[in-house]
Image (cartoon, rainbow, N blue to C red; front, side, top):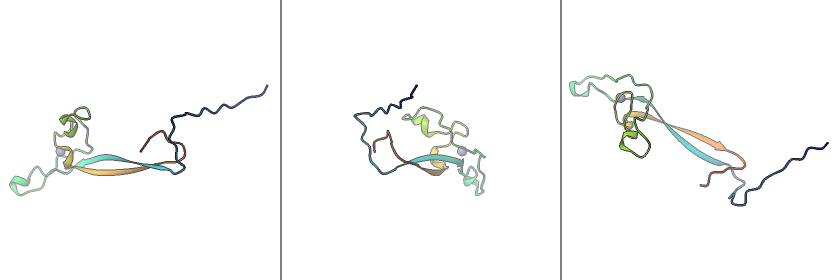
Length: 90
Ligand SMILES: [Zn+2]
């Protein structure tokens, strides 16, 4: 018995030969200086931003762990490269 491999081609695939790159943004430790008003320096020790609400709401910009705005957290950008067929359309 022979096995056959079937390749399904999607007619709506907008494929290119080049690899696509996607940037994923993560937010690291909180860097808000809570002692700025007394001339000192103290961070709250929050290690990673966790959205306290769903994306698209204002709560998504507030850290659930420390309550600070997302902009206080260190921004890290991951570059992810997808080669070959990609379903994302950029
Ligand atoms: Zn914080």
